[in-house]
Image (cartoon, rainbow, N blue to C red):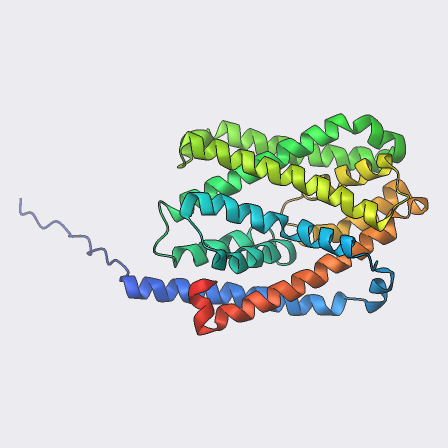
Length: 304
């Protein structure tokens, strides 16, 4: 028999310059999407909401710390793993904006493209970011479960009813199913970081969550000095439950109607949550616009 075997076509690898251009254009495309999402949010702002904004400087300092808590914690984690410089912070803030006002995990994709263009980073970019994201979700889910379990009697004493039962059951299903997926897929065997790096990263994520709870509680206390600690813990637990909802943009905006439905108008929390949600949205718009525009500048393509 004559051997006329059909030879497969040679695999063409994308040249390094071409790959860099593709990464650059993909990153700019996501930055443009973030900018468009930011512009789309402008129509939903009601200036009348800001008339009740407090003038207490401590409130604004606490608000800034609450907003920056996530990006700063991620920067500390990635600085330890990659040695990131301060000029990486704009990309991390843009990541937070994308996750909050575009859709969940769009910020992860944007930051991955940014990181891929940083040739000096150590190890697998995708593997490291995946590990950090998995540990963040794990820490957040576990913290929410703990808060729900500890504060269940307190929460039901101020907000019992069918709506709370349905909402709590939905969040519990989401959390438990995500934890089950992590365990069934043996995620620990797939993670690329060392055990020490995994432990430290998980500890830093847990510290971020605890610090966020403390800062958020202080923010509410500064906004509503007469707010009882019972209501404070209840709204903090509800906020953590809302933030476990997947692929939902502007989660803080959902907290106001939920608080109104569960705790009633007498608590005064509905208007306060609407104010904080509006302030957060305006901050997202400002940060998203500035960092997205900067990414189109020649100097910003390398730094952000």
